[in-house]
Amino acid sequence: MAVRSKPYGLSVPVALPEQGTAWERAQHWLAIGGPIGLIPWVPATIASAIVAAVCWWRPPAWAFIVPAVIVLFIAGGFAGTTSERLLGVEDPRNVVLDEIAGQLLTFVFVLPTSAAAAIAGFVLFRIFDVIKPPPARAAERLRGGWGIMADDLVGGLYAAVILWLLARVLR
Image 1 (cartoon, rainbow, N blue to C red):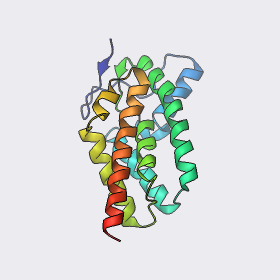
Image 2: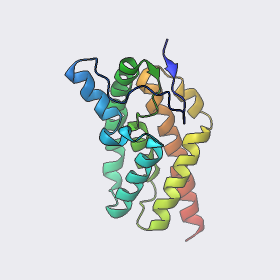
Image 3: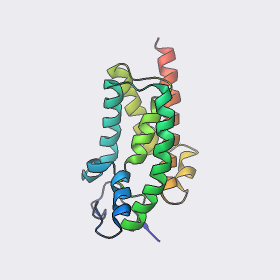
């Protein structure tokens, strides 16, 4: 049975495993968001901040967000499962594809056309990602990479709804 990675500890295995086929290592590279997962501290927060900044710089169309999140979820489910197996750790902290998908989903109802909207979406997503309100905690218990991805999509949906409500109230 895999051990859970410590959120802020240094006992996380090496981010780039030497074992596995080239295909498995490519899946792991995808799961860790390329070089973002190699950042030793708070890679999830950095990944979320990058997505929020890119979405503010180039707000995506709604028609892009939903298919992109679906593709990221499927790819992340498989890639996250591979990462867990290669590292021998359940939900490795350097896997950030889930944050990328969840942060993108945060902007499904309100595009971050201002710095305030981008920052609000970022903060809301990080809050919901950390506190994991129901059913996020239950979603996290799904096996393998599916649990890694699912809880962040629940957090992203919560953040999206609150961001939409804030945008309606502050109009």
